[in-house]
Image 1: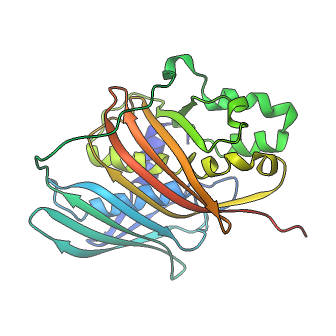
Image 2: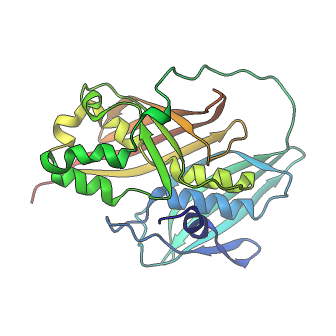
Amino acid sequence: MQTVKELIDLITLEKIDHQTFKGGNYVTPWGRVFGGQVLGQALHAAYQTVPDDRFAHSMHGYFILAGDVNVPITYEVDTIRDGGSFTTRRVVAMQKGRAIFNMAASFQLRQSGFNHQVSMPNVLPPEVLLPDIEQFAKLKDTLPGLYKRLTLMHPNAIEFRPVESLELLQQARPYRHVWIKTKEQVALDLPIQHQLLAYASDYNLLTTSALPHLEKTLTSPVFFASLDHALWFHRDFRIDHWLLMAMESPSASNARGFARGSIFDREGRLVASVVQEGLMREKMKS
């Protein structure tokens, strides 16, 4: 996908009936449906069934089976509850008669209340940093396999500017900061902003869990797969303006990596929080 419009077209689903929607797939080089696509599409499906004055504040999803990029995905939305302030939906993504993903999402009326947040980390601004695709060029000769893998999976509609250089990442600390935004300036409704952030939030988290293990992950075949993913929307934002993802991985164990992130805008407002656990293990040798 080269443009934001192509990404929005991917996330936007065809309505089958008032609770059923269908979407196509981005054909990934690794042959499985990209988890961020399913997150964005599932949230789109849920949004189609809630009143216009309710906005997502949280979503919690589980990846059950690897999706087939050659088969459309059907999203079935259950109307769990329509309350005075909150609306709850459950979404199940289906392929070939089997569930590949399910998600619970909650939507809320705009309401006033208490307000506080943690401070944004003091890091280099995006203007002085290279896009990740340019930073990857250093690997072309030394680690050509890794270079190919990183460039093939790159989403061209979204720009990522890592704060830590490749050299710093090899110091085995499970912390990472990445600026993100769409490459184009686009005025979008808040629900679409939420869906695009859900898509983009599936990048960089699980690889943060791999940082203390680069000696193996850079040189040996390692299998990564998202298991579950949660995202909370705290404040409004624009995804065509720079957002900082401050990520850390407190733990990796039992072939699973766990990572969480705080997402800030340029003014230092905490706009979202994200958590992910994923499968992370060396591939079995044949």
